[in-house]
Length: 472
Ligand SMILES: *[C@@H]1O[C@H](CO)[C@@H](O)[C@H](O)[C@H]1NC(C)=O
Ligand SMILES: *[C@@H]1O[C@H](CO)[C@@H](O)[C@H](O)[C@H]1NC(C)=O
Ligand SMILES: *[C@@H]1O[C@H](CO)[C@@H](O)[C@H](O)[C@H]1NC(C)=O
Ligand SMILES: *[C@@H]1O[C@H](CO)[C@@H](O)[C@H](O)[C@H]1NC(C)=O
Ligand SMILES: *[C@@H]1O[C@H](CO)[C@@H](O)[C@H](O)[C@H]1NC(C)=O
Ligand SMILES: *[C@@H]1O[C@H](CO)[C@@H](O)[C@H](O)[C@H]1NC(C)=O
Ligand SMILES: *[C@@H]1O[C@H](CO)[C@@H](O)[C@H](O)[C@H]1NC(C)=O
Ligand SMILES: *[C@@H]1O[C@H](CO)[C@@H](O)[C@H](O)[C@H]1NC(C)=O
Ligand SMILES: *[C@@H]1O[C@H](CO)[C@@H](O)[C@H](O)[C@H]1NC(C)=O
Ligand SMILES: *[C@@H]1O[C@H](CO)[C@@H](O)[C@H](O)[C@H]1NC(C)=O
Image (cartoon, rainbow, N blue to C red; front, side, top):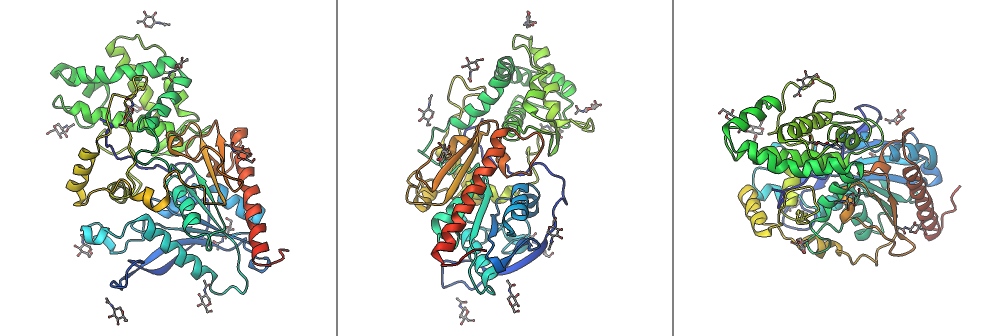
């Protein structure tokens, strides 16, 4: 059931809206940066805060390379950029919205209506938008200032790619939880689900075993009228299971939830869909202490465990398994990207995995893309464009990865050179380091943030030397 499933790179969890202040601004950019036969333009959105900025001392621009969603959500959830811009660097804060997400729609509400219109949704076009925006921000400066890119998840991939492709525009990049190796042939397709498994297993072996057993139990319940009635009632399903195949919907939903929990297994309460407690996997596993429970007790316990995620507030009336587990992100856009450039194979073919076996079947994947979008994925395109694992010619990038994060499996976990470095956060989930500081932060994430600041300082010094600017 996982084979070919498109996973959204979840990046957005946490702070309530409205923590930070900024101005919403717009820049007109070409729909197609790479041709001379199309003059169309659109307005891209960006958020800007110049309150802390001191351009007169050549203080930097901190530029968030927006990813697959409304940019205001990334601005809210990237507290580290805000804190270090104001406290340490007197930086200009800019959050750029990725084309085809949020309000940056090249063809308005028709942006996804045909392959001709949606076809300009690529990472290369988005990076070219960001170059235009930086040139615009610089247009009235008398001396240049360094630009530091920041991003998490797909945004982290973009931050890294931005430095690789445009080193004359971006002096360095902080690429958090950026799975730039999660492409065909670069890492085993099973690694993602093995990290999720290990997150549960290291919390509680019995918990992991209980989940491993639950798939067959769900199948057997979904396969009979009485079993379905039992599940409909005891799992408080909004829409009843009517037939055997509906069990698949339930299992798909369940694996989405488990994967999401692994990504947001943060050390303090956060707000993802519904509010979550600190270390939600631990909170959940408390209900699954014994994998030898009989079927009904197992499913009853699993339902209670899932309620940590689905019903932490106690206000959920019924369980909606049809909804995607992360509806607030730009789903259509990411689905298209996953069906074109961003082909990230995920499978479950290790007997130790707690997920059901699922192969990675490119043909089926491609067919489903064609059915949805009338396009076929190009599995090698990202490797052609960005080098796959051959990144040693790049410089000035920090790759950070929380080792609890399933995306770390496709992340850069070792140093390539003095200026292409990795920092590991053993207690961290999905880009915890980019979030605002918190009293419950583990030491490793505090150190990672110091690591980032150290490298930003180095990159700035290098910039000032290169441009013969003596910083104040
Ligand atoms: C920038 O952020 C600071 C701190 O939140 C706030 O006081 C200020 O008003 C903001 N500036 C702009 C231009 O939004
Ligand atoms: C692009 O704009 C220029 C200047 O307005 C115009 O002369 C040209 O015909 C346009 N090209 C296309 C392909 O629309
Ligand atoms: C887009 O909006 C316009 C004006 O509101 C409407 O006429 C049109 O049908 C919409 N198109 C789609 C694809 O929703
Ligand atoms: C640069 O200056 C011009 C003229 O004052 C102004 O219209 C423009 O908005 C300025 N650009 C930026 C990025 O502030
Ligand atoms: C689960 O943890 C146990 C130790 O408690 C270890 O022996 C086993 O290899 C782990 N299994 C997986 C799949 O991580
Ligand atoms: C079962 O049938 C009902 C009534 O037709 C429908 O509303 C519901 O969505 C179906 N359940 C599923 C899981 O599709
Ligand atoms: C786990 O549950 C089984 C079946 O109910 C029971 O026999 C066993 O004693 C339980 N194990 C523990 C450690 O509680
Ligand atoms: C959510 O929790 C409340 C309070 O415990 C309970 O009444 C309700 O049935 C629960 N809903 C679901 C879907 O579990
Ligand atoms: C899992 O699948 C991948 C690619 O489909 C393959 O390379 C790998 O050997 C498989 N692993 C196992 C344990 O079967
Ligand atoms: C990379 O190099 C830095 C600086 O020497 C070091 O602090 C860091 O631990 C190294 N990263 C890894 C993953 O070894």
